[in-house]
Amino acid sequence: MPNALVLAVRAACADALALLLPVSCAGCDEPDVGLCERCVLALTPAPRRQVIPADGGGLTVWSGLVFEGVAARVLRAIKEDGRTGLARSLAPAVRAAVARTGVDADVALVPLPTSRAAYRRRGFRVPDLLLRRAGRPVTRLLRHARRTGDQRGLGREARRSNVDGSLAVRPGGPPGVRVLLVDDVVTTGATLAEAARALRSAGAEVIGAVTVAATPRNFARPGEHRPDTFETHR
Ligand SMILES: [Zn+2]
Image (cartoon, rainbow, N blue to C red; front, side, top):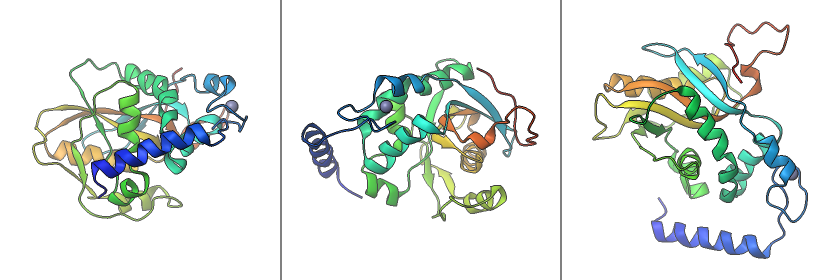
């Protein structure tokens, strides 16, 4: 695991490089701007709700944006290109999703854990960064209990068995704590359901989950039958 100094130096270098290298809008490639006004507008939150199956009761997930277009490009720029400064532009989506849960202040915002490999590659944890940029405290209660395969390209059932039993509660995670899970994107919700299982089996009360964005396949288009889809609130 990289030590804090290495990470701090790397972050400082990235900031310095950002001043020297030409930038372009993460949403539309317009030159000389990190995120243009039109793309900032495209990140205006439009919270949506879905309920995913989970042990101990369905898990309500609020997402601030749909994972497509500008939102998808900005999230990829943060995750794959290390443009962490863009996380601030997603803060309204995080805050809107948290607000829609309607839970009061005494709830712990618990990010899904980042794998060691991803942390080594990026030097930061995506859900934690998004929470901090939204001005919310981060309560890290979860850890990986085992390695998992890549979720990409797997169907719903395969994703669930891939992550089953993969998460555990960190030592000192108090029983009885009220939790909202936090992640960047929800696809099938298999990882969120596994996080809920781990926390509930350790005695925590998992109230729901929030994500910056949800993949569009989670939501019905008019006239389309989607048995996995629940209502949308704006
Ligand atoms: Zn743009």
